[in-house]
Image (tube, rainbow, N blue to C red):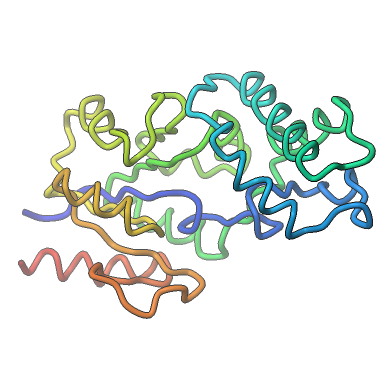
Length: 230
C-alpha cells in the first residue's frame, strides 16, 4: 500500500515550549519572585502534582481552572511565601491564554505546506483545548484535515486516542498512514493500531531506538519511500 496520510504529534515534532518546560509559562518569572523559589523544588512539586492535569477540560475556561488549582498546589508545596489565589490565577491565565508558550520549529510552515499538497495531514496530540486556538492563530490549522486533542476526547494516546481517531476518521487506513511522535511509548501504541511510525528527535536525545529516527520534517519523505518499498 502507498502512504496517503501523515499524522503528527505537536510537542517535540511541530513545537516545543518556549521556556523549555511546558508548565513554566512565558511570564512565569514575572509573576513569581525567582529569589523566593528553588527551581529544583519547583520541578519536584510539578512532577508530584502532575496527576492534577487531567484529560477532562473541554473548554479553555475549564483548562484555566485546572491550571489554577495546579499552580496553587505546587506553590503551596514549595512554601511560596506570597502564595495567593490571585497568583495562581495569573499563572494559569498565562499558561492557557498566552499563544507565545509554543515555539514552532523553523521548518513547520514550508514543510507542512509542501506535504499538504501530496498527502492528507492530521494531528493527534496529548494536550488541552487552548492548543486549538494556538494552531488557529499560528495559521497552521489550514494544513490539517483533522486535529485531535486528547482532553476533548477524555483519552490520552496510550489510553485509546488512536482508536477514537480511527473511529471518527473512517476513511483512514492505518497501513496507509505514518505517525510521527517524539515519545517511544506513543509509537508503540500507534504501531499496535497498525500505523507506520517514526521517532522525531529534534534535539538528539536518542542514541538508539527500535524505531526509525528522524530529526526534521523533511526527513519524512525519505522514510515514506522506504515504507513504499516494503
